[in-house]
Length: 217
Image (cartoon, rainbow, N blue to C red; front, side, top):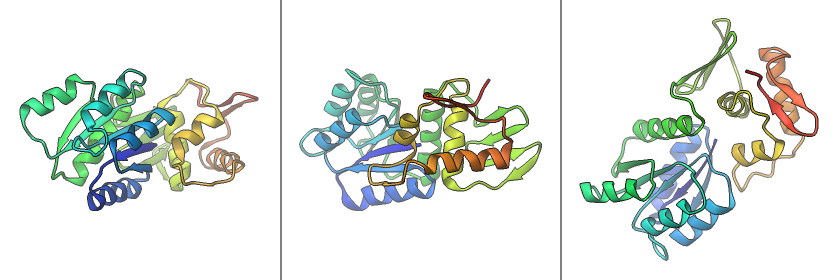
């Protein structure tokens, strides 16, 4: 999953990005509101972590402009803790509001919930036949036996499973699994799909020629 962090304070921006990368998200960053809005409009993020007190364009205005065009899940992360600020942020279209300082585990839990809901899922456990995917621990089990996946294999499986039944194009997969600085060769996607089939069964992921990949419902 790909997340945009819009935060002007360098140390905090780096900290949030590190927390997300450790949790195996693909992460892009922006240091001001104008840059953040442009990236949010240009790329299909799974979620955005947005500060409010930003230079050039504050978080309120970023939210207003973004919601005219996109419904990307937004978590406001701000030191402004007044009830009025939280209400205003939610009314402008934010999906959640977390006050600084924050706990790492809560930030990750709130992001997982936003991404699940955006995909129409309410639970942290996904089931596809005998396959069980734990979105919280990022563990996968087949017929009750844990299967070891690389971080990239898991990310691919999670995205396809969250959108089970829908054909996902190669372009969409790259947009959601890799950050803007990733220069991974395109044929590696085929390698990851092949590895998942070897580990989880050849029928799990179908290739639709000229369209993409799908986990059938």
